Image (cartoon, rainbow, N blue to C red; front, side, top):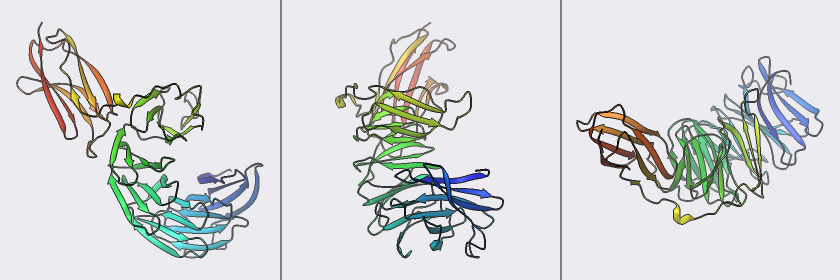
Length: 394
């Protein structure tokens, strides 16, 4: 390319590739024959090609998307412009000045409509003439993976920079539900049957009932996620979960996967990171009976919080504390802590301080540096809190 690329898109059939590159002060839209590759056309954003009112000029293009029928290209900027181009020659069909960052767009499957995520509005436009069908407030602008249509296209979900996940009815733009996950939204996706929504922000990944917005479970981490084709599993970074929230597989430790994929047969997993240079992992491929050999037993999925008595007790100098995080959690749970206090209420140890996925846990506590006596350990997870006693005898 020769210049810095800001956004890219490949057609569903793999025949075209389009990208935005920054050329000196102005971006260019470039269309390639993806099988070649061969340059089909290039269109700089300058006064000759675009309106004098365009804020693309001298600024950046952030979003580009080829339509599902290979007829159109949608282009958005960080300054609020959106253009619909004819794919065959780059002709501008219509344009909108939305005055908010355009970082994500989605065409309907038949290319009759396009959804444009700006700041703070999500717009639905008719492709044929650019008519606005509706707009709905989504709090901020969605990042590159922050906008998804449900499989039947009756709903559209957004995850925005400020951390809110929102599901909107596509027929009229009514907000069905929303939830604030904290800060810096990352991505959102529907399961292939449309029953679940997974959304990631820096507060972790939450899985919701798609229709009601009820939080079902959560997992730590924020990186790439992928629902399996059979709707049974969810791949989150290097960990595989059932859709009910049970972790059943952990792959090689990876630092922040940017892309995740499971094939239809559940026999291959692909993970890609941003670490393409040595000693980074780059792209990892896993093959075999990845999930078909797993025995599912939903009766073992924890449904209640539990803090067990430490064992052994009395102890010297080490003991084990077991606790359970359930698969149905209060939406306001932010983290899990397990702390130890002396008889005066002074904190002497922090054993756990992080988000925990649903499951059963054991933590070893070594009190070799503490004096003999009575101690208390407290488990806190959102609204849940429980304390138990333990006795150290040296």
